[in-house]
Image 1 (spheres, rainbow, N blue to C red):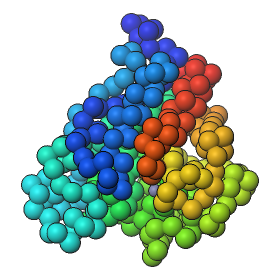
Image 2 (cartoon, rainbow, N blue to C red; image 1 turned 135 degrees about the horizontal axis):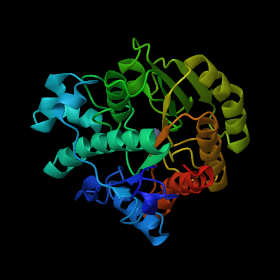
Image 3 (tube, protein in one colour; image 1 turned 45 degrees about the horizontal axis):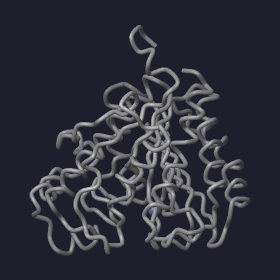
Image 4 (cartoon, rainbow, N blue to C red; image 1 turned 180 degrees about the vertical axis):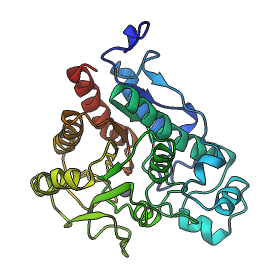
Length: 314
Ligand SMILES: [Zn+2]
């Protein structure tokens, strides 16, 4: 760490833009206000301050077409997608939604650049893993995981990227976009009975069963993740810390507690840091009518990451 960056020491870089929660229907199944509430939750605990908050720029069309069809990107930007395509996304178009969509991809990119510089960084959004090359699905429009890993490789910032997707839903968009991409390894820990019903094929899929709790989850992590690391040999990791594995999530069928989630996050982050591999966290999915409880659940990964960032003393 260079001179003049001392104030930053021991505080994890966090990436957030106030546009992440645009005006949106309160009754919608997608909890759009959770991003702002997550920022409030972390500010209340002095984990997000002016010292460690980084504000991203929107990703450019040029960046997004690293993983998407130019026509799809332009049609979404200009609100020209068909009604059918918008229904599949499940989020109505607005200027605010459009802006946050581009900015959240820029945010995952910024988080990754910060992780490369500091070893570990976390985003307060991201993980839109159901977005495919030329269509969106399941509340996901652009696939930040695929876009950003492609950019890191194209820019020579990483040779081999590993995406560890622990959202309760399979990362089907990521898997299909990156199917032929040898420099990016996608793995997905998800619940078999959850959306999407027709699964894609990641480089490594680990299926849990409806009702599985912490014990089954850790067994899966401990059995497979060290092996996945050894065969993928990554020099960069993108971690989707989906909160919809929680027992109170209204969409997810797994049964993890707050403590289980913290243990999952700690296990994965340590695995990377112990091997000196930079890791960027994104938040993934999480669904609840109780938006504050949901924001707190998403904040588990930031609390764990902040503690480990201080402990590893980058
Ligand atoms: Zn999900």
